[in-house]
Image (cartoon, rainbow, N blue to C red):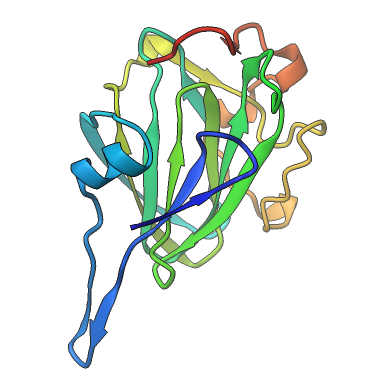
Length: 189
């Protein structure tokens, strides 16, 4: 796998080695050994999958300690714009984000470390989205930020009037109003 660094340390894009022939393709979607060597030593404990239609926007979500999560995400079908926002107070990149288009054609994966809010918007008629997490889901530890925070200025690549949100995702605070954020000096692992 090829690891592509982004403007925010720890947030990386992973490009798998694809082997194509007239039958189709093959690639190793995850190798614990290679991930530990090239990204960070981590143990994923939960795999999730979602199916969504055009305009669905999920995010910007995170889990607070002691249930903070890293995520390794990818698209099986369709295309999304995937976003990781640094919400570690005191970080040199606090409030900045990385966005990457993940598609069934490019097979890219996106690693979002603990201390980041995560979300994605669906750019195609249908998407099947998979993600690995390094901590179990804990509803009492949920946190989130407003997807349309004007200070973040995220271009979700879909018109605002086409965005489909869960009822919960309609009512999250902006970053500057958030009552709880990570601290950059804390060891989140």
